[in-house]
Length: 193
Image (tube, rainbow, N blue to C red; front, side, top):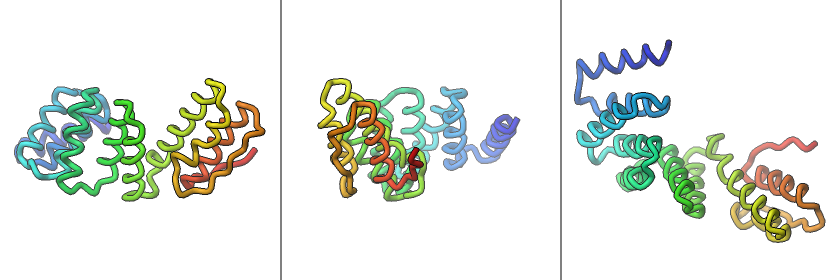
């Protein structure tokens, strides 16, 4: 298949140029993204980072591989290094937000996702992340018999957007409304039923 062909091409390129940090990094990401040969992906990413220790792409790659492997502390360290080294890649900010989400640092996750959106306003993956966060928080508040607070969450977590507070809706309607308002607030189109 295609992935076997790409693996063969990366192997051939690295045979000819074993210290090509870009090829090492891209091959590592390719393997990690597919969840294949994770030890090899880590080895390739570590080689790229050691060859170009100030290159944001190499640092981001190592952080991403650690993230996919589930080593969140190392992922956070390397993704932070990539950003400090000057990364303007929206994916680096998105991945750091993902790490913080998994670590339970939701405000930091939101901060980095917003930075990612600033760098790439059309990223569908990133656009939906604050929406998912708001939905989860609203559902938790409704489950805890606090629908009035749930109605306020979109305004709190999507600042600068006009979000109306509606208290007269039932719990199920409130979560649906929060979803709809949050989607509009992040410039997502919502079809009203």
